[in-house]
Length: 239
Picture 1 (cartoon, rainbow, N blue to C red):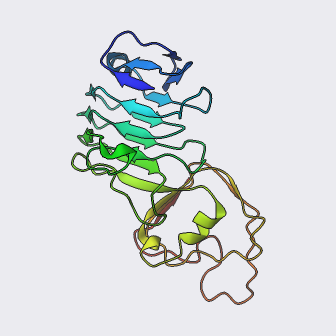
Picture 2 (cartoon, rainbow, N blue to C red; picture 1 turned 135 degrees about the vertical axis):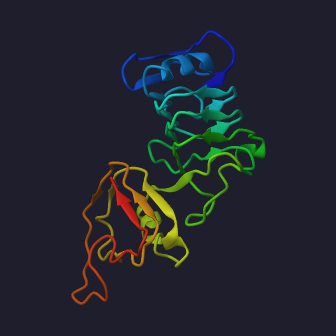
């Protein structure tokens, strides 16, 4: 999907509900930015891409999106999200930028100052009163990438898309302070003795996904028992 300042919108449509979801129906879908703004005046808006078609399922923000109420904007890409123009709100709205929306392990979010997506992205998100949440695959798991410089600082979640990622949350003390999100449902049956994640003080968002068949074989645990053996102040575990 290419969000541009060129009318009309082609290769996709909004469903007219709330949230008002735009789904592309062809490659090189052009989404007129004014159509997004007009729909944000009356409803929350979700722009999504999937695995169909011959392209990567990326979303390119190539024209500015600006609105002034508290209706939220979500970009949900099968691939990556590239900010080449700014997203701006002055009405306490939240913005969600979700790359890799099926948990394949491929996809990131790039804006001004990011060295990824070719290093040429120029956009940021500027919000008054709202929150920016970003979900992406980092270049090195456990270490946050720069999403964009300037604008409203995002809460950036590294996606956990496999059991190795999940166990590596506890790899170093520094990784236990970062933010993570479960990219898809995970089956832990192959792990006969899961090592509980300890001293966690970051954020973990399940994104309404599930962890199945968790097994911990330890009759004398040194700390608590469960996915997280213990959490420190400031930890947030949700969904």
